[in-house]
Image 1: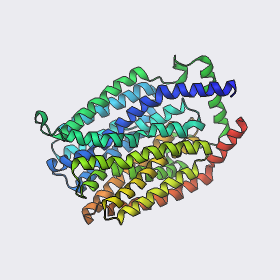
Image 2: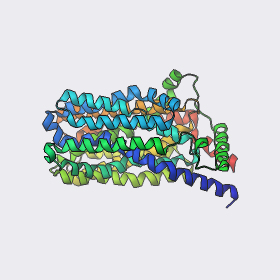
Image 3: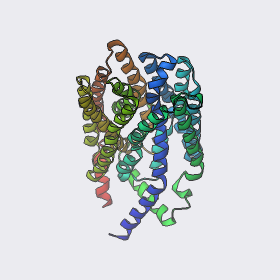
Image 4: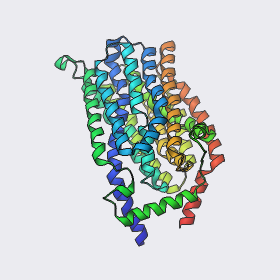
Length: 438
């Protein structure tokens, strides 16, 4: 191994251990606070008198406000710096989560979910942008997989924890779902305060990096910028309306819709099969556990193969297959297989998709582009599909049949990805850049 390769490996290891674990924990709390309403609904819906349609509508309001605030929040992060803005995001969403424990009506539930979406807006694309300051493109599949593993990991540990918190029902005169929101909100607020101490905005400001390590990073980023053909519209509005960016948003909507909707509805689907709250919490975690393993393996495989397109298409196809299987399943065993297929596909798609997306955005528009992709993905995949699930459940009485639209969305997203791939050929550019560097 040459001295340059040793320096590269040492620098990346130092950066990864410094920022990835902390951001992973923060992201896990984002997912837990976003999806804990699913477990809370096992008690909360009856207390507040929420129907399936009302619960689905209220849950979807999170994604509508998140969509509206995503791009402005991401631009604010770029202006004020990641350290301050990520801390602000976590402090406000933690406060909203905490206050949700005191809602007493359907209208207050709607308001709480709307405010939570606005408070959390900009966190995910902001962290993705932050990672582009530290991690060279060729390593983003694997490091992205580690960070995004926070989605399924949070549900693996979050479901049993939320189920346990529900068992605190009656403690100090509070319901179990009250304790769920209180304790998880306080945890997020604590992490928000920790952001101000732990994070550094740019590598050049990091006292824990040597001058030689900073120089290597700057040289690496400069080379990658020149090597890859990128989408670079002139203005923010042109970026937001760029056809490639909108198609990329549609692609990610398939996995976002599946994962977000199941985070909200999967506990009720499983409990409808005759399970207890504790059994629901345990079985609810299994598809997410499989998703963790698949996500890390698939992201690392994509880096090694230097390929993004098929590593994104195949997981989306698995989402479609799993959704169809759930629709026609009548037993717990087959439904668990279908749910596992959907989760494995949804989470395996994430690291390869975002590595592909970031490779076709110039640095000048990355903040707006990544935020737009995530915002539209959340609006379509989250806001729309969560409500659609509730509407179908209300009309048919079937939790399983409500999964059918996700198969159609997956098929459409594959077509959109083919259009983007043909127009930008990020994979071929990526391979060429590696060959030139060698």
